[in-house]
Length: 222
Length: 245
Length: 43
Image (spheres, one colour):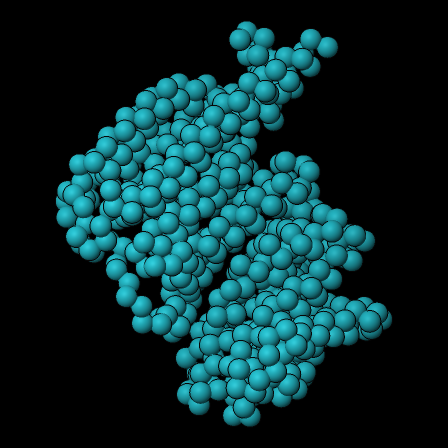
């Protein structure tokens, strides 16, 4: 079981590393979106640090959305999604493996870059560990929920905008709790409550999302 | 009982069965609406705090209730469609999405029109208004997904799936929004929408709520019948039906 | 009359238009569908 999970993760990572540009693009997108805010709103120190938790997370939502498409697109077109369901292992497990791989490709780089973004937006140093934790817990939820949307639109050409319409409303709780955690940390208050909320969201998503993704893929394969 | 449900899942039987109900539903809706409107707009006393504008709640509150009720109906139908793959429940999902979006939009618009004279502003990021707005987005998602997939049976299944995912998320969204609101809401002089209401004000509300519910069933039946005809247009029974009329 | 009545009539008006037209459009769609099928039958 576990070996199947590891095999599929390794396979997806290998495929991703063959097309490096797709690896870098979402993170570049993330950095650019964040840069737009000081330019569009105000570079004022105090103002920006107040806005920062929301900016970091709205950008994360958009970047997650943009990168989401690639999770099943290729596999859907070349038929390897069907192989997931023919395998002797439970499809939900293999799907979970694909989501984990996808998170390693898109979520992990964000984790690396986010402290740097915190500096750009004047988030005080004491809040950076919390910000880091919210990204660590929050982005896997985004990947899990986003994968449901991708699975539903997999059969469509150019489902990009539609995907946003389906998935962004479902991202709202993550946005609320994650940015609230960062805000409280900026104020110097304990943010463990919000992080616990995010954590339970992740557990719930880990249990339910693979089921929904597998059912959605079956519908799209029709 | 089960045999009856089984029969009801056949489009032809459902079409005839729903057709018999239509005049009754139309009649009851009109009567209840007229009674409720007269009661709410004329008979019910003026609110001493809010003045006349409180009368908006007689359409705002039923719309808001319906917006949530229809989503639940849609999700249940979606679940049935996914598990038992019955044609009628698939149709119910797509038709509920349109009707539910209408109720949600109505709840928002009437809520805004109520907010202006009461709060002095059309929009506040109040927990209930915000939840309602997100609910509208969820409905739009279902409608958009359904209409962008060509094959209507696949589209209905995908929409059903999204409705089920949405209904799991609604409590979480609602909870997070309420909680977010309690963090950010500046101290505003909010008059509660319905503090323990006087019976003379409550009764018209209940009449209107019932009227809305029956109106929903009525509109749903009309739309389902249309969709049945549209989908089954190549079958013999529809052709016979059209030829006879 | 209280100025607030304007908002009352506004919201009732919107609701009335939306709900009545939903039924009217649904009934018109049925007639259209029937005509379409009839035409295809004649062919």
